[in-house]
Length: 546
Ligand code: N01
Image (cartoon, rainbow, N blue to C red; front, top):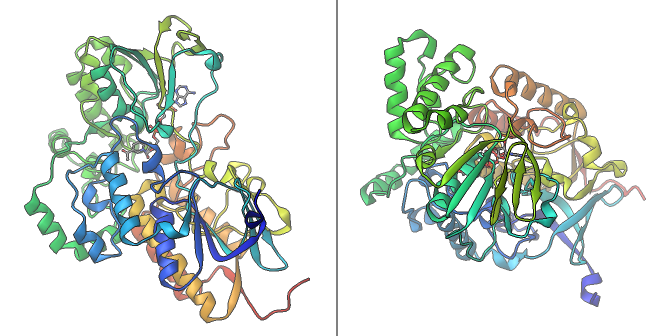
């Protein structure tokens, strides 16, 4: 270790992560005159879009809404090529922003924050990195991404596999070739469903190991018409307002009609229109009771199941692909030729709920029934979502209490607005647990959080305060409100990663705020308007408690 590495560096704010949220937080605080340093474990900017470079990776939010909206210049200088941009184009966009705003000079790459402790005497955070930096920061801001801790199941024998093995969430930078190979994909969530049709076209054979069949509807992706882009640009301030007041961060709203009150013909027409139109929430928005009413939801399920049956030629394969949970209680999935892929001769579907995977062998994979010879295994097995990335660091608050301990047990996961948590003063979370984050267009949620945090820091500075904490009753009330809203929906009735159900041993509990980004923004604004009600702030002038 060099001498300079042993020097303690102090910043007003240390931000963890250089994805969409970390980059905007850096820009915002730097503009306001704070000293900020971002630490990023990867070699470059991008966060989720840096790591998820598997074949077929693309956005499920329409590109024109999936960008920063805080700068008109950025909006006007970037033109998306297609309705659902592919990962390389999104990563290019993030690089464009990083270059345009000259962000890299305040980012330290290839450096992982390993631990952070709150120093109660000096009211700052002491932060350790895996490169030996010793840091202190008045504010510790996590911009970790909700889906950055990949989940690879521990399957007997996996270390002995002689072929290639990948996880969609940690895809290599070098080209992965499927040509002439026998490939197995485990997992049929958004990642698997995007990758499967592409891999199938190249591989000599593709075996899909499916645990839970999924609903997926066509993305109906297409190139953008320049005239359409021009119109969008001209109306962007209205679009931005609609996004910020919406449910999911896109400028559209569920229709008011109830599925259970219209005739089967009217319903079918609505669903058919949505199917043709494509898009993430289009089908879910056809009726306002799909997210709440079991019978209503079943009509959407039936429609998608009938479509799967129409598309998939082999009735036995179609049977295996029939999903049965409430539609929309896992993040909806949109695809390009997913179900069609099962009509290919080189594709086999294996139902691992009925015939579980027993082990990985040196040459393939064994289920209870069959042994499959494979040259490559792709894990599309998702993430330890939302809380997982926090637990990769040893974060300790007042009294040295580890965050992992505070949040142990699903019912104990308490935050205030998903932005902060009691006992961890001066720590902010961008798109943390119990915020709308993963249920929304992430960029809309990120911008709202970053701007709210910056406003709060300005409030503290103007009032000459240097410490905030959450009042425990405020986080009790917020957590209860999150639970009550979730209970009104069908969301907790499904085993999903929203519920922590995909990770063995993870406590069950809904991890986000389900009331929508519009309501959430209003609540956050009210809290600010009432002098940051629910937060305890302390003046910088008080004697240090040494
Ligand atoms: O992960 P997932 P993902 N043995 O958790 C299965 C976002 N995203 O990476 O359903 C066997 O959804 C698991 O089975 P089950 C988006 O928000 C967005 O696909 O748990 N199988 C499931 O089939 C998304 O929701 C885009 O029974 C196992 C799959 O693996 C989120 O990321 C693209 C298993 C995991 O599905 C996560 O998506 C990609 C095991 N032990 C991702 N463990 C966009 O379009 C898990 N599975 C923007």
